Image (cartoon, rainbow over all chains, first blue to last red; front, side, top):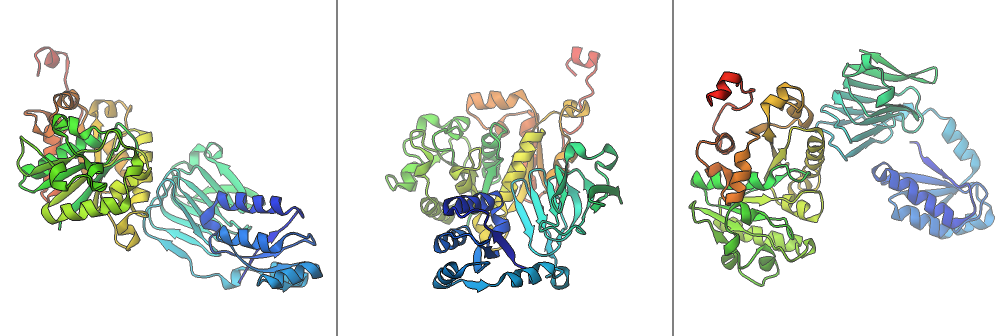
Amino acid sequence: MSLTVLRLNTPDTDRVIAGIEAEVARAPKLFSGLPVLIDLNRHRVDIAQVADIARNQGLVPVAVVDADDDSAASARACGLGVLQQAALDSQASRPRSDERPAARIVDQPVRSGQQLYARGTDLIIRAPVSAGAEVLADGSIHIYGPLRGRALAGCRGDETARIFCQSLEAELVAVAGNYLVADDIASEHRSQPSMVRLVDETLTIENL
Amino acid sequence: MAKIIVVTSGKGGVGKTTTSASFATGLAQAGHKTVVIDFDVGLRNLDLIMGVERRVVFDFINVIAQEATLKQALIRDKRVENLYILAASQTRDKDALTEAGVARVIDELSKDFDYIVCDSPAGIEKGALLAMHFADEALVVTNPEVSSVRDSDRVLGILSSKTQRAKTGESVKEHLVITRYDANRVARGEMLSVEDVKDILAIPLLGVIPESRDVLNASNQGAPVISMPEVQAAEAYKDLVARFLGEERTHRFLDPSSKGFLNRLFGG
């Protein structure tokens, strides 16, 4: 199982809290119930307060990493585990794909204003994705229907993730943070069955 | 138990109230005891279109606040048997609508009526959410233009996630109603076609109401357009009601009129 790491770049507790709130507000569903490690990065912050805010935002703080002795003590006091930096390194170096959960399959249309996220896996949609809708997956996204909204595959950096759809009419497509907006999508791919993937770090569209 | 139907759209001015009035009238004419409720608190219109504005004593909000009984607030239509109207309040604001209050009123109406038609306000705020909350079925009213279709799509998303049925794992049965359809403008590529709208919204089509000046005339006269004789929009609404009640009818008024110069001259 992979864990998301919340790495602090400042010892300023207020800025950390503001940062968490802003990030979660961007995509509440993406973060809801997500277990996180808090990487203190040797900073000293009010851990109890940060953990509380994270919980209020729907995250599930599990443990702190890279804490000095005082911070470790206060982390334990508010029920968090304390991990060594090494634990994190072995985490990061392990390929994630071995233990992917089953793909998330959706049979209903994804409507304007809806956001759908397949955490740690592929997303398969057997209906249209409307303009104004957003579908996200840590793995690949397959759409058996037109893609008219936004699709973001490889949300946690998987560069091998791809997007497939029966008719590419998207507002935006992205793989591992590389994106193309509608204006960038060449007309020969418009409304065509298409595949979007990263080739040499360039987002590429191919007709199927 | 009554069947509860919400008439909704997202966008304003597309014909929700016109559709609610004609749909409810059509159901009543078919012999079903029907009540139509105006959920647009503060901007009430349904009573005007139904021609009962001079007979409103108590309204929906009065009933919710238990200042009046349902019996006092229900207005019986003088032209059509089996048809009742529950007007919105013009003076209160939307906060007067509460989920518990709406639930109680709908519950009480369910005992007496076959159909409860909820005329939703525009937008996706409290009034609109409560209008759809208890719905079994929904008429999603759309004009054949991009922004209206987009808003209807948003409303369909809310119908499938925020209503009581969605919360209990059932689904609200969705029907597409396209209003203000102008086949000539579609032919010229100025409007989305029926097929375009069906393709984007991906729900079954219940009816297409042609653009017609008779609709405005009907509103001004305080009569639902469905009750006007020899009017295309009225015929289209009658078809819509019949289809809703299970009859198979082909869609009419979808082809551009081939009125040439001579035809127009001789009124053909």
